[in-house]
Amino acid sequence: MTWQNRNPYTLYKSATALALLILGLSLSTPGYQAAEEQNASLKPWNELSTERRYSISQSFRFCRFQTKNGSMAALLIFDLNDRNFVLKPFFNQRNATVSSTVKEQKGLVGLNGGFFNLSNGESTSYVVIDGKNQCDPKQNKALIENPELKSYLEIILNRSELRILEDSNKKLKACITFHTDPVPVGWTLLHSLQAGPSLLPKLTDCEEAFTRQSPEGKVIDSIGVKKKAARTAVGITRDNHVLLLCVANKNQDEFSSGVTLDELAQMLRELGCSQAMNLDGGTSTTMVITEGDARDESDYSVDKVIAGEPEKLVKSGLLIEKNVNRGKSRYMINSFPR
Image (cartoon, rainbow, N blue to C red):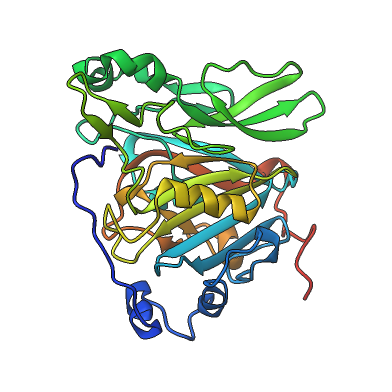
């Protein structure tokens, strides 16, 4: 969604007591102690304190920490090699909240993803699920017929995307690449979600026309690249772990105390990612997660670890769910020691 020409919401640095009010936390809240401890310096993902409340195993970990300016960061670390779980995009024909989508699809965790028009809800991002393209941004008239974007359309349609690939041995691999890049020989495209810009190995906001020049010569920063804002991102490590990251303050203002894209890229680099991509952010930034064995019940609740109030409707996102082909796993493989 477009954030251009909106005023940023600024938060002053505060003492711990004020930070508690902003984040809506107390010292007894699970994860706050970990957040406090990790505020000083960001460690690699495998050295962060894990919240057992939301974590399932070594392959499915949840962490929470504060950024230096007091914003909350929620991080889900997922091992793509663990076939007890499936990471895939979701796509809503009619825009819906992440919470409702996760409940409908009985997911474990969900977050917002691709860009869409606020005016008509149409996607401006390609989404592929189970090898099938769910939408074609070329059919989005608000995008294609926008005279201000005409000279940039080829670049916009070729923006970065997260891909989940599978080889003949059913091995999975995650990567971030441009939309028109060919699928490597020996691999099949299972899923993809387009957003952008790429954050790692380098920030490509200019190359992907998020930062661009108008015909009159004015520099347009369509997603507030250099402004602190609520952000959603996905990162990939060299050992095939996928990191899902949301950063926002409690009020979830479009330009909250969050982070710039440079800061977001640095966070993911410090966490251990070699590739990373920005997803839709601002008021759309949302992460919801389910808890404990309630995930096996017919009617279970989801916890909004980061979400606006009211929660925003989105077009697409990422979802982790149980692999139904593996049966009703109780997640004992690679589980945490008791």
